[in-house]
Image 1 (cartoon, rainbow, N blue to C red):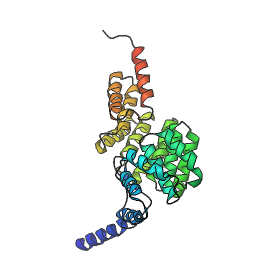
Image 2 (image 1 turned 90 degrees about the vertical axis):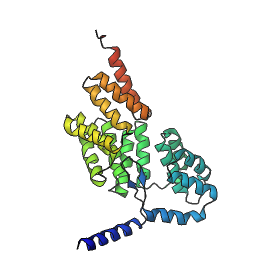
Image 3 (image 1 turned 60 degrees about the vertical axis):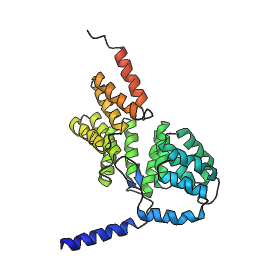
Image 4 (image 1 turned 180 degrees about the vertical axis):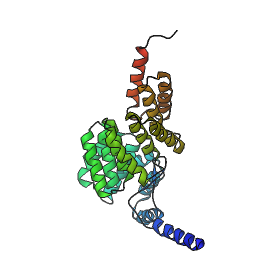
Length: 273
């Protein structure tokens, strides 16, 4: 019976993996991949592209986002799969934190762009970056209408609640994202911060630390630990955690602001004996 169950399970897994899906598979470090069926379909469609376009798409799939943007830009105005090209360029620019460029692309090609669920998430991230929080929430709603199981939309909506100081509203989004993807390191880090701000210290620290077990290069987790220690007045530990986040990614959202707050606390602190 165990052998039969194993064969059935592996057969079902194989079938599901070969079914093309527009929903990416989330990895622990917050990046994504796709089912083999999706990649095979993409390979089949590549026969219609020029070699230069194929190379740019390969760079995007490989996570070489700067190279992908350079390669895809000449094809933004091409009518062949134009919406997909716009989507990839915007996504790559959001990932590399070139938010001004991403917004310019969207403004220029809005009429030719049909956002997927993840496309709406990228737009939400852009609005949040520019502190347009109501517009960001509207984008995440659009994303979840298209795909209610989009863990990235849930995580980013929760993050935007955190940004607005609405920690109690953020918690259900993070918990749902983790139900869908238990190994989502960024959602653990974000849930941890919300819980810490709500006074749920043990669970909050547990989630932030677990995030670092999943991905020890997660600058947001270190930033959140820095925020926690800053709130408690533990300035040296706050500096250690915020500096670690800065070393990993100086563009981490709001990190520069928290480091400035920390420095102002040091500047106003009486010198120690």
